[in-house]
Image (tube, rainbow, N blue to C red; front, side, top):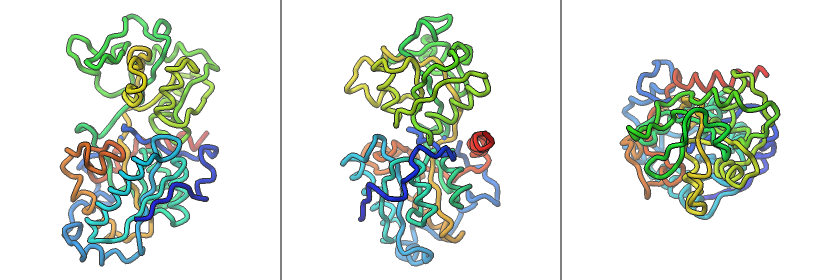
Length: 358
């Protein structure tokens, strides 16, 4: 397998605000009720991964497939590269030995630019990035992620100043000791609220010009959805981009900012090095729900080849019970895949269009 970690086409990085999306560690709406005209109609086909070498032989539009990914940190770690290579090998095997490579871009924009240039045939991105790839690179959303049985997630707003942003209640802890307020976690039932906007009264307390640790300009949960929420509330902030979900959490944890955003619950990503992060940072608001991240195929493929690709991915991810040791889980903590629901992705499409009008 060939592994690229840098590329000339990742040039604009986060400087060009032309709409990309987050990965959504998560932490995205997928479903089975798709229109016959949508790409999700590829889910029922007699071709696919079970065809082995026949499936590979039927992909003739390209000589090889490169999957575009964005690392969780500034650059791909050795573990991330190994996990991604295992995923490429698994997809290759499902395609009967068809050549599959990995490309790590520096940003979400980088993988979209890679699809525009023809260097990337499949990209894994957050929901807004999927829509941008569709709009700017002619891509087709073909699959969406499942995590813990859910096809959506939320932005979490967190703070090191709960006295200001926790309104009428004291922060309460879940079983892991992570603190929440403003009704997001019910201590008696031990349950989180249903995914959706929460704590918006607290968000209205943010003073205009306050610096906020967003993730990066291409992140759905780390920028687009929370910024849309602020726009609707009429709150104007000074957007600062930490570069990743972990970095946004760390920036507020270290006191560089008072509030920040990430997917839920990115605090767990840094708890090994910062055991008290769940106590020091209180989640006080949510934005969403957000459709889960997914996979977009380039316009190089025919409809029949899209069928083959969907079946190949689903051959090892349809169960929804992937866990540690499964390449797809090890890359992006994805428990499973479902065919893309274009109607559900309209949520992300509206966010994309709203930002495009600014």
